Image (cartoon, rainbow, N blue to C red; front, side, top):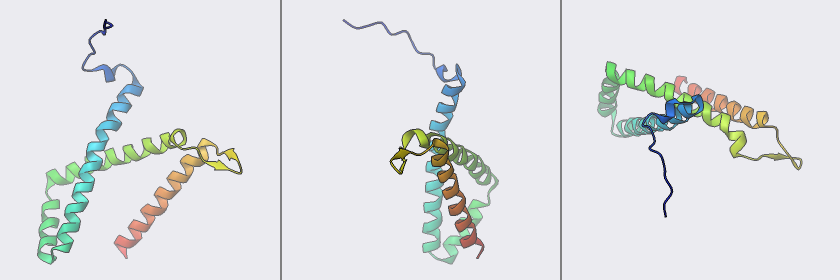
Length: 126
């Protein structure tokens, strides 16, 4: 015997704010994947020589691609921030035999993000 399951609305994720942010976070994964593909294409262009790199830069300067990358940046930052907010629940960090406060775990992630970002800026601008 099977139990009755009422039909689920296509827009179930709009009923609650938490559901909405869950759906948007899942959608943000598509943009994270796009950034990975874009960086792989950049790496391939750099490895293929100056002409391929110049062609990649010209392709990257197209308005639609700049717009896509700007939207992707917003979603990737949203993805990172939501992950850092969830990290204290997903990770148990012990310090001196006691569980570290969730704020410390989140702050550690944000600090690492700032350090890595500063390092990337230094490498790019040096």
